[in-house]
Length: 114
Length: 113
Image (cartoon, rainbow over all chains, first blue to last red; front, side, top):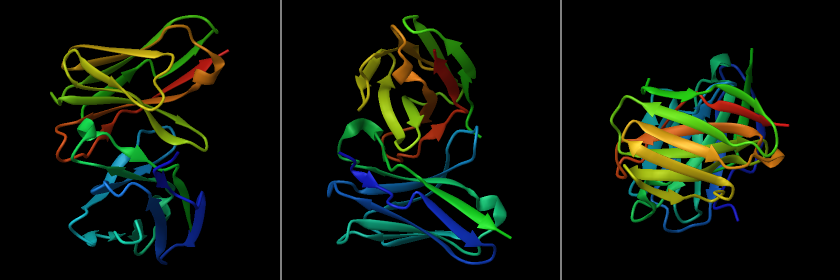
């Protein structure tokens, strides 16, 4: 059973607008969350992370929001650019165990059109 | 970019043959991971290592074995390849279990016919 879920397989956004990618998790022990971006024929690259002691983390155009009570996080990209078109994976971990193991969602394909 | 290479980058093999994929890192990171990526499944952990000769199973370990005799190398072996193991395989490394930021290699596309 998937512990990290990305229920939208795809998202299409116009250049300059906001992209919002969503992720839900079921394991209440997860306390660290990450977003990865993946271009075709390349490995995933780390984008941004957030600890469960925070509800927001910002890095340039990328902001991650965490709602622990809803077990939900989202990635906001503002403004969206065509180069942001990629698959985005949400990942989570329980730092108290599992030796750094990450649990990934199935990914959301973001397309940013001009 | 983290110094991670994977070899081979592409491989076609026949059902029943053994296959070994190699992950090599130059970062001296302690933790190494093997994932497979399939459409509709995202990234799934096969095996991971938390030190030389220290390995453990992930969620899809059946049919796979691993070895880590040196810090820099993590080998993934398909003992007898099956068509269900056709996939893209990614290796990842992590400096510690605290930061939890894993860095991925470029991937190996394996086709089992």
